[in-house]
Amino acid sequence: MTPPRSRQIPNRIRHGAAALLLAVTAALLAPGVATADEPNPPSPEPGSEHGAWAGHSLEDDQAPRITTSVPDVAGGSVAGMDVSGWQGDVDWQRAWADGARFTYVKATEGTGYVNPHFAQQYNGSYDVGMTRGAYHYALPDRSSGAEQAHYFVDHGGGWTPDGRTLPGALDIEYNPYGETCYGLGPAEMSDWLAEFSNTYRDRTGRFPAIYTTTDWWNQCTGGNPDFAPNNPLWIARYSEQVDPLPAGWTYETIWQFDDEGVFPGDQNVFNGDVAQLGRFAG
Image (cartoon, rainbow, N blue to C red; front, side):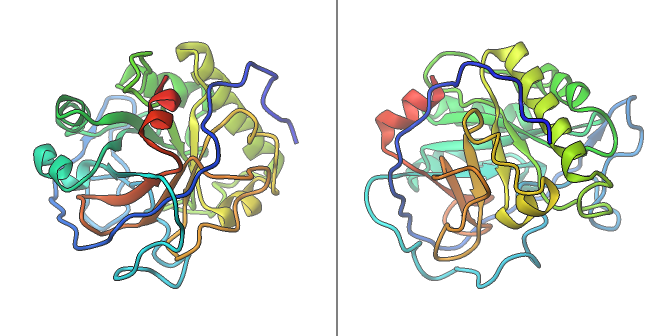
């Protein structure tokens, strides 16, 4: 397997713990947008134009789910969320009042989909005081890692060293439209991920975070441990425990622990305190 090229490792947080109360979620629907590159936008549901979202493949992937309890962890943490076109325009003042302090917002998918609510979600969260970042839903069977990294940066996925913008995140999980590993073997998938990661680093100065599940990563990359030194882990696991982590990582930077709760969209915790979140944002 081909690991990412050797680069300077970006600022990362120290291992901490996480905790967050759960409640009920609000979700609004909104149409997606296709571009000339890909006339027919991805459609995980019949008749849907929203595309996929972070955690789309988890419903049948992980159990048991937690909806009435708190993740079994302790210590300092920061509550957060992630949203996509499915949430429509978000009430950021309400999310802030409910305790959310950071968010990831879906920007793009493949090379033909842009979240039509991206500006409201990305700028609105920032305007109320949140630390925010953008994520890209990867479709490795449709175009190269470099092409998708450029598309992501060109449509909102860049990074600014202002202390409140998170590095972009690459969402790579079970294929919502076809074969589990997108028709790629472990070495090919590792090459694709490395190309995306290094291209994003060339464009922004930061390595992207990687959003994934342990099962997908270990299956589709063959348990490649070589991304852990450079790419912060945003782990998706709907359970009372975050472990086990994908091969190579010894701690998670962000844990998405449920797809419903007090905030719109998915529920997350940052593995550290507010000061560490600021250092991670850079």
